[in-house]
Length: 616
Image (cartoon, rainbow, N blue to C red; front, side):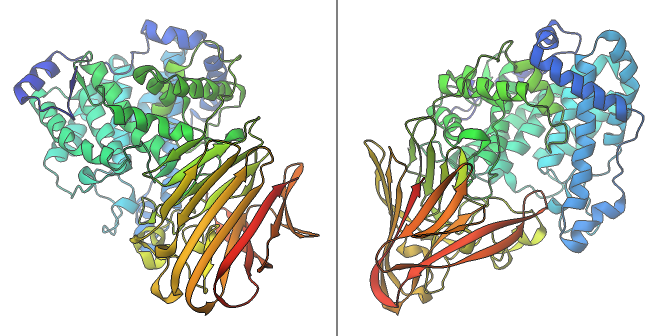
């Protein structure tokens, strides 16, 4: 096995390997490889739901993408009008393809005209690029701009030809190959529209490479062209891996880990499948293994996730991806997380309206699902410290009675929020102190720091961090925390960090050290902020909660299911008020959090704030 990221392979050798490659990256629908899926009880349940939806909508055309929708983002900065229609088109294409792949020959034949029509409608789209990614074009269109979703579309078309090729009209297959050859493969090497993602240490690099190269491995017959593409990818993908710490962590969080590293893993699967294991992007790289273990470490109970930065609070890692990683990298803990995920998918009605429920998702979910998941149990997840990320995750020794995560980091992270020192605290599988995570994505959220940090989700006032003389943390890599102590062993968790450099000069902050102390048995959490200012001033300690706060005899009470957490303050720390903070969440819906404010009892130049959170 030759690892393309670790050794340079002569192009002639690459070309010879590619000349004998297997382009069947996903099995043909009449292959015996689909039979276990058709017999699988979980897949049969999903199939019934997919078939019912397909039968309801098979007579309808895809929702249209007129020129007016492409142009909305340029005019208004609103992404949702176009993207909601785009994703529904890809979901409908995925549903009809999944239904046909899992069908008996008779039903497949009846569905084939609809499948062909859906592919034709996708091919009729003038531009597969999101208008938000072709932001300089008044039309919102750029057929030669390779973005995340143009690359995804290319890959899906390649997989559809893999699965149904001989059933599709030759003219349609020829058009798919010709368009991808021109707009994706040749354009990848000799771009007609600027490509910046090749050199980025984040998800775009991996996702776009997977889409373009995955399609090329499946469809492109010019072996020299594919060899040159692999050479280019071998130079660029190490930059993606460099975006992860040596401990495997990424400040993009587990959601974007699923997207970026997940697509990198799927590209490796495609490359190893195509070349019979002769070429690889994984090889035996130990950092690749450590990265694979990062997101499973961030999983919380009851479907929650550690969601610093632009993460989603309720999110589950894809079990099909975890199944591949666990098997390929021999990671039993990842395999156990996969099995638990498949059980959840089997016992929960399939959400056919989930944004990414497309054919890429369906075929991997069905083909990788184990035959029996009913007896799987939720894994016992351990404690973790990621020094390169400056984050910890720890849990109660018994049944996740409490879960805690906190981060240091800096304020120029991927999908950055100004959140050094923020934390998450769950009690009884229920959020108590939360992260908002990702707000609705609109143009102004990405256009500049001046507009991004007006969003509650990204600014310090939307996080459980100190406020110094009314000053929030500032954006930039120089505004960074430094971890001072991390102790996970024993009866008490101790985690402290220096936040002095996280604040702008006008805060007059000479010293600010935040310390967390957590008793494992009781779940009692103490937060101490020790400060020194250049002149007397006031410090506040903020808690962000998703439920209304109740008054208590000695402080405030935060409800969490059938329990409560009492928040009390120590000497010189007083409760001030609760702010109701409204925002628009990632789904574009109105949402609210509650900002609990504690502060110093008077202006001082030095002192400390102390809060205690006690589960009841």
